[in-house]
Image (cartoon, rainbow, N blue to C red; front, side):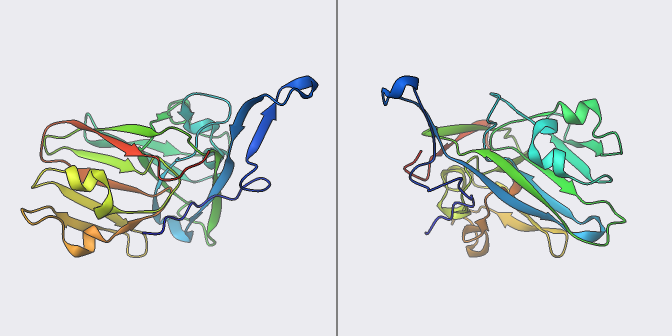
Length: 233
């Protein structure tokens, strides 16, 4: 399947962003592809299932309050993080002073999703951008809670992928359930993996770059080791 990398590069793609050593020795110290993904928060406070598949350019962790998404989100926006231990939502509203300390300092794991919505009173959609570096890692692990517990996931790379083609879908235990968020109708859609596999609708579902979804893994806790789907950087 054709994989679309939803990033806009700074300069030519092949060039990426390159820092060379001083004095013209030509030694490359780093070569990082920098880009962004645009997400639209609909008017009226409709929920958007999101993730941050681009790495921070200054830190090891992805800290919500320091992401471009959090900083660009309008006053009245609400973020919701899924607590996989207690199986509840946690989060809050951005007021005129910004996000609460708890929301601002929330660390988002690679391959973890969350929900974001525009202000309920918003009459116009609002665009936010996910900005950062394209992950160069050969694989990125994402823990799966398992035991029939809901976990929120996303592709840790900034690429669309067909769910049924992923190791996550193929290795899921029979009886597992996947749920995708329908932004238009604001409902969940998905189904169960039976002995014949996933339904054609679930298997062929394309998960967009920066889109989150739920998986209720029927088996034991495990790890999804997502493989890098591109040859650069």
